[in-house]
Each structure stands twice: as C-alpha cells, then as structure tokens.
Image 1 (tube, rainbow, N blue to C red):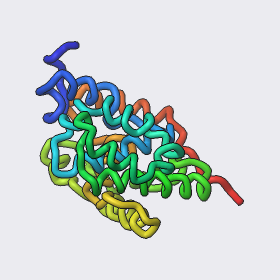
Image 2 (cartoon, helix red, strand yellow; image 1 turned 135 degrees about the vertical axis):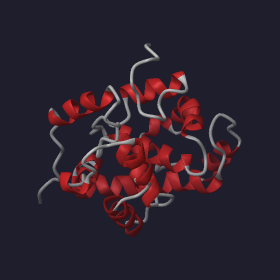
Image 3 (tube, rainbow, N blue to C red; image 1 turned 45 degrees about the vertical axis):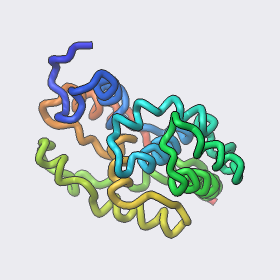
Image 4 (cartoon, one colour; image 1 turned 120 degrees about the vertical axis):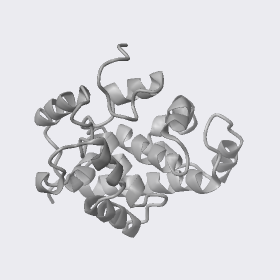
Length: 206
C-alpha cells in the first residue's frame, strides 16, 4: 500500500487505520448487519481510540455472532458473563448490555421500516448543511451536528443505549451518510463517486 498518497489527517499513521480509511470509512453502506456492527463498535469506542476497536474487531465479530442482531437479541445473563471474561473485546458491562438491548431494538426498526438501512438513510443531511470545503479544521469541528443530534434523540426515544450525538456522528461518517474525507485526500472523490452510484433504501410502505 502506498503510504505517501494524500490521506485524511487521521488515516495515515497506522497500517490498519490506512486500510480502514481507504476501503471503508465514508463509503455508503446499506447492509443491515454491517450497519448494526458499526453502531455497536462506535458505542464500544466511546472513551477509547478507534484503533483499539479496529484491532479487536474480529474478536468482537466472533463474540457477538458476526453482529447478527437477530442472534444477539437472544443473549442472556450467561452471555453477558461470558463476554465480561473475553479479553479479546472491550469488557464494559454497560456497553455489552447496550449491544444486546440495541439488537432487540434493531429488530423493531426492521419491522417498522423494512430494513435498518431504510431507517438510517433518512438521516442523510442536505448538502446545504455541509461545509463548502472539507478541511481538517472543518472535520475537527464536526464532533456532532443537528442531524446527529436528531438521530441520537430518535434512537434514545426508541430505547437504544450508548448512542449519543457524538457517537451518532462518528457512525454517520463511518457508514457514508456524510463524506468527511478532506479535499486533499485521494479517497474523497472515490467516496463521492460511490455515493453518486448508490440508491438509498426507502422505508416500506404500509
């Protein structure tokens, strides 16, 4: 991998970061299991570095049945105890229990909207709400936005845990609801092209 191409300020200091930055971050996602994984991992990241989460991601996938939320929703107290003993993940009871709770809430969203993707893509911000030029300074200012506040508020109302507006915005960046690759990053145009070819899923009609 070429280390000298222009990348976002955060994506050039580690091989794992570079891989994630170049191939995942900011590209549109509509796969429900991947979306649930991103929601959960952003929650686990709270208070930690994202690199810590990336290094543990395969362990998380194993521990949480590939983030199949239909399976995770069935986890009980024994599973919580098992996960608290798993050194391969972040052993935080509140975050583990939130993941199980949120799996059940995800099933509810799926029933209401048809897919998780249809729900989340409703929160794509209008272009007029986005910076004209995406610089490092602009990205650093975007810890949370009105749309991420709206998303976090709506999920809280629906019973989701460990998903505040800052986590919501990080999730929006990760799943491509926003493209925060900076103007000098070689991935910005790639992410823009991917979004142009992408059709956001619509909620089911009754």
